[in-house]
Amino acid sequence: MLLVFAINHFYPEEKEDEFSKKLMGLYLHGYAEDFFLTQLSELYNLRFKGDSVKFDYLTLYPTHEKNGENKNLENLAKNFCKLVNLEYRQILRRNRNIKKMHELRTFKERLENIQGSVDILEDVKGKNILLLDNLTITGISLIDMANLLIQKGAKNVVGVCLGVSAKNKETDWIDLNKTLKYSRIKQICRSPYVSEEKRKAWKKKSTQV
Image (cartoon, rainbow, N blue to C red; front, side, top):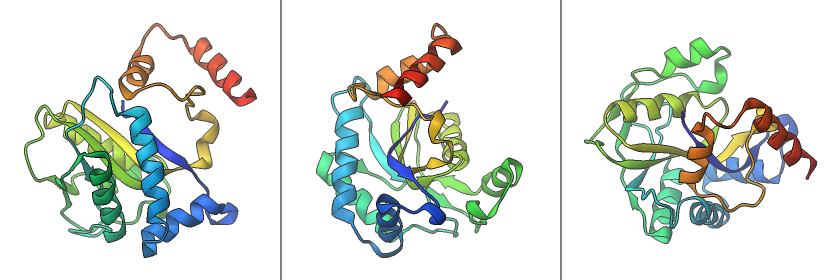
């Protein structure tokens, strides 16, 4: 199971909102970095600062190009880490060109596209790692990467995204009181004692607020 935390929902171009415009502006041109620094810091302080699980560092998910990194996102990541006193380490490297994920339609195509395409550059045994990406639509890329890191010995891997697709917004879990830390959310999500009926009741209640 991979937990992914995001600042806000991202809408496709046909329903683009102000947040989505800022996200694309940052990724393509480096715009609105101060906005995302503030939002990321608030997210980090809410979910991770003071938690029982201490994260060792943050790393950036590579672009679709071999050895590719988005410099605007890299600058944001480095400045964010300085702001919250967290180490930045780029331990991931794309070893071949892959297709852009949004151009692929099926789960099988997307999974085959990314499998074996990223190298881990150092030992991650026992490490707690934050995995940063600009956007997640299906979660396949982050899940595949987190699984590989866990297989290599990482203890905790958590996805942090600027935006998460609004396509499945109704299934996203919302902490209405905005108080829960990562370790507690992880415990809740993994608990076998939370019935499906209770989860549906929580979801129904959250949509009515």
